Amino acid sequence: MRTYSKLALAALTALLVLSIGAGTAFASTGIELTPKGANSAAGTITFSSPEAEGIRIRCRVTLTLANVGEGGTAKRTETVVANITGVRVAECEGGTVTVLAPEVARPWRATYVSFRGTLPRIESVRLELRGVAFLIRAFVSCLYGGNAQGTTVGSPVTELRADEAINIPLVRALTIGCPASGNFRGSMRLERAITLRLV
Image (tube, rainbow, N blue to C red):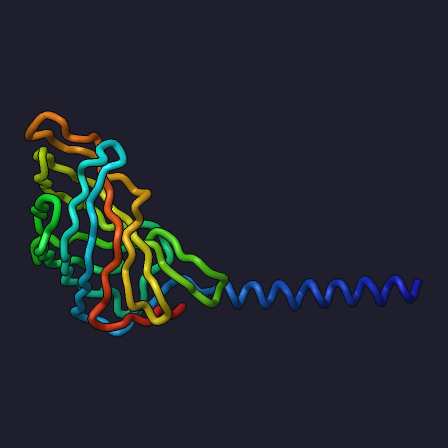
């Protein structure tokens, strides 16, 4: 009986230690991105469509962005992580892409989707860029709009990588032959690296 009591006590102690550890590891409710303020990201992004092999437009893209939230960003879907206040597209091959660029008064919102890793270590954060709208011209002219997604790369974060599995739907066909959706792939390097920290 005494041996059984000792085993039960040991098991209870181990369970208590594990629960305290888990509580500490998952007590964080937010992710802080530093430094705050203006930043930019630039790289080559390719627009293509899974339905039209002939459409493949590569462009040099530069984003102007600003991290938000003084005390950190809540780990909650749709929380705004950064505002995209400007987009510049240049040096396109295979066609042209005209972005219906955001304005300072009404910027695009980069919102939190999820993170990858085991707390408290965050390997990457998935973001959604909401309200993207752009016109492509190749052998067709098509207007697309919707939400794009991407993930952060590195620790600290040095790049943003587009998720080509996310398709952006056709809003309006200006010519015959527009595919029903398209996607982005490629990555953009940040001017200033961003550190992710649990708060």
